[in-house]
Image (cartoon, rainbow, N blue to C red; front, side, top):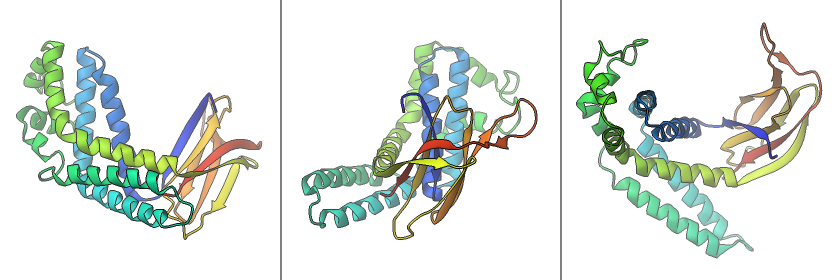
Length: 255
């Protein structure tokens, strides 16, 4: 669909973590293009959100496990008759190179950033609404008033230790998204349900809906069964389920 909205739904905690980190990096890269103080403030806020996620999840370990899973799946695929062994071999080499880079990263991802005095001071105040005002963090206030090239130099240094893990994680998500069963479906009365083959390693679902349809997709379920409700936002009051039939594209990633 040319003008469409994609609603993704992870089927395990690892992919859930990857999607959250992916979104935060997208926001960081968006604000990195801006030179204003508010751009740099927003960028620093999203960087701290990533560090908070990394503090609660071992992203390095999860990425390595996903690389191992992809390698095992592609190795089995290469043995099947009629498979493109040359292309699969190229991908396996890419996965091996990614694994070497991740193994070469010392310690926990992002751990050294929390040793930076400025980041540490900002992190201590972010749990307080509006806690990064100039009177709370005069050092941060001064940093925000540095010339843009100086701020970007610091931001590039902070992000450098995350770039390898981010690039690898994005490549893995691209692999997963590209290996999908795609079909056109109809949600009768705004509701759709499907049972998944438990023998297939489903990782991610996506519902693509034409943006002219005045609904949003509310997906729930797990790796064996899921449902989609198409909801209409009311000007006042709670959203309600659509009453008409809704046509959409369904993608089920199986790599």
